[in-house]
Image 1 (tube, helix red, strand yellow):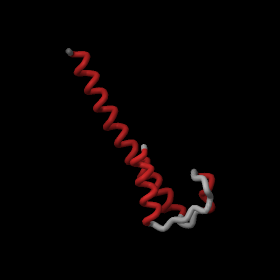
Image 2: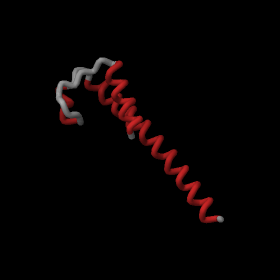
Image 3: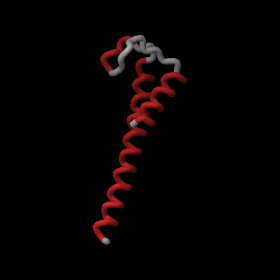
Image 4: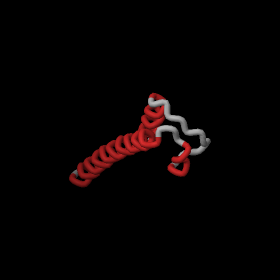
Length: 70
């Protein structure tokens, strides 16, 4: 999750998106200067996080299956 958050942060910085609120989330959506690009950056980070979580789960399930068969 830290990696996906970092990806969103870097994409937001590179795109020069300004979020003037000190907190985040979709409640500050009206304050963002590039709304659709910001939402796209968030979805990109979510996608990366979901893929990484899926890979971790697959790895855990394989380890569990090998322990059960021993």
